[in-house]
Length: 292
Image (cartoon, rainbow, N blue to C red; front, side):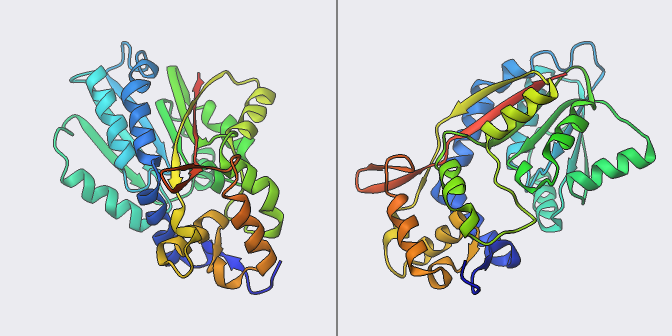
């Protein structure tokens, strides 16, 4: 690994911009919204049965766009029932955006919001220390398990917080995605980083099986348009390269042989498809539903 290569997470502002470009160039959010529309109503069908209040815990809720979609489905399923929505999110910037979104969104009556600026591990430690074990009716962990050090312990802890009929929804990249192949093949040659680990639904399946936790898994197709990555000097392409490799300024700091190898691979069928002149990276997502 070249000494000049450094993790993208060492430059927060660049990471945020790379992530913004990723969302813009991918069908990530559309894929999640499709799942919320088609599958979520059936999943949450019984979480609030005979309950006067539904308690929802959002782990890594980000800026709240997907959270509010989830809340709208719960509200439709249980009209008039009070919803207590607590959010665990380490980024103050994201919490501010979330609050702004709530302020300008209608139809949120009967929903009480609370935000905790902390990581899931910090939340876990706080709950354990206070010995105040609240039970939840729905817990969701969307694209956040990459940032947890001990994933099996985290899964076991949150599974232990489920009330009667409750569910956990986890969204991670699929074991069938291009990410899985990219990480397995090149992870050891890219900057190591203790903030983020490579994990896909295939890894979670093994962990949940060994914990004896029951789950269902749904895979949805998603792509990311990486065409700009193959245009020299294209700013959007360079930011997408950084996001793909989790490396700051990858195109200018990576060893030429590594760059050439990844560039060639990303155009291969196991990573991407070509449609109408575009190179679409396989960004398939897995939606894993865990039962109490």
